[in-house]
Image (tube, rainbow, N blue to C red; front, side, top):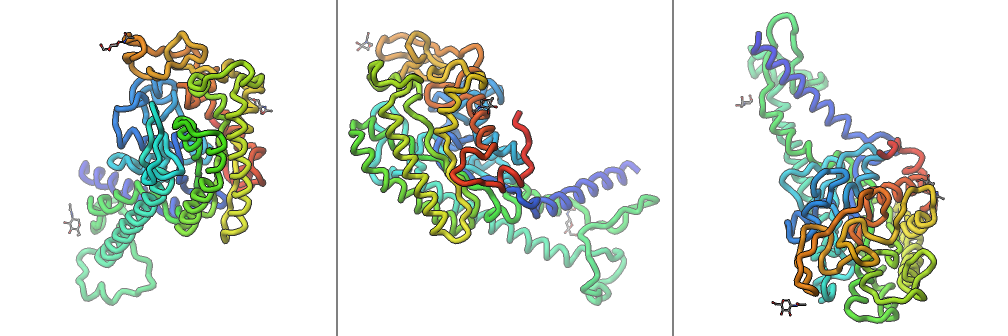
Length: 452
Ligand SMILES: *[C@@H]1O[C@H](CO)[C@@H](O)[C@H](O)[C@H]1NC(C)=O
Ligand SMILES: *[C@@H]1O[C@H](CO)[C@@H](O)[C@H](O)[C@H]1NC(C)=O
Ligand SMILES: *[C@@H]1O[C@H](CO)[C@@H](O)[C@H](O)[C@H]1NC(C)=O
């Protein structure tokens, strides 16, 4: 009896898995079965942490303290914009594609990589003094996506072949039946991998064993059927191209002259994604980088260089020029690519809106919540948020501290935003007001969960 129960449990589990798999194969109308994200740290849920473990400060406490209660491979105290979008769409966590062993990709994957650029590292591009540069530029990320897609498809096909083979062996015939009779079966008659249970006495012939579970297992963690073309694709990068060039001593004019080339390169990646199936794409505009506490610390300035919000005017003008060009190009890409449903999302406007939104609950929008106390913006460029470290300027060990309420800060560590800031941006995104053209599929048709 115990044995029977155990088998019954196994069977229900197995049936459950199969049913589940089937349901997941057909995404609800108007909704996205997965998210695939590309770009920089705003979408990095573990790429850099997985490839360069522990060398960067964000692999240490207090990163992750608000939500994950431990460092989570994210440049924040909690969830990123990517996490909030996934939650709103009812999807699971979006794992970094490069963190392969334990990751679950059934809701998609991200290639986003902190400090990533549009310009290729292979082209001799560097970040300049004191800054990390990701080797995973947008072009490399798209190459990695090609590889990911090939191996997912090959795994799924392999499983389908094995399943078909098993289907030939496992039928709803009684086990006593001989093979001859099996062959004569009506091909139209539905056949099952699994036998139904006769509750009264014993289980009927058993095609149930771990083999099926083992067969299902590898694909359970992969994107669901239809994901390549039905997923929501996110692209957000370019900020580090600007910063790195200025950091290398290039003039604002030089940086501005690079914009058309940068945006063209981004367009090439987009075209590749489109050929690989991408149809629904959101391109994130840059945030007002001139309000970032670390840049305010790094760039020598006087009160005249700041606007009334305390942000660097020239820097933000540069960012806005980039955004204008990007936004125009998104409209062109919409025309030039067949069936491409692409939107520009103005992260800039949302964040500037936050700076002037008294009801949003942010008390500080240009000082870092986590950092070495004592400077105007709570940033010590030599000792970032993270574990205590030696400050070469003083030869003293400095210990970064965390503000008492991170929810009242836009910036967590000087460069990256808090979970509260990220939640605010996605809340605003889902109102639909900040896309260049309406995106009803996302903001109206999809079942949108309230953000927690
Ligand atoms: C599972 O079933 C297959 C097909 O009948 C059989 O070859 C295999 O040995 C079984 N595996 C286990 C672990 O029972
Ligand atoms: C200000 O913030 C509140 C709270 O997040 C939000 O509901 C509201 O839409 C924001 N106002 C504007 C003008 O964005
Ligand atoms: C810090 O220590 C190094 C090596 O001992 C020394 O060369 C340097 O002058 C010191 N700097 C300061 C500011 O004390």
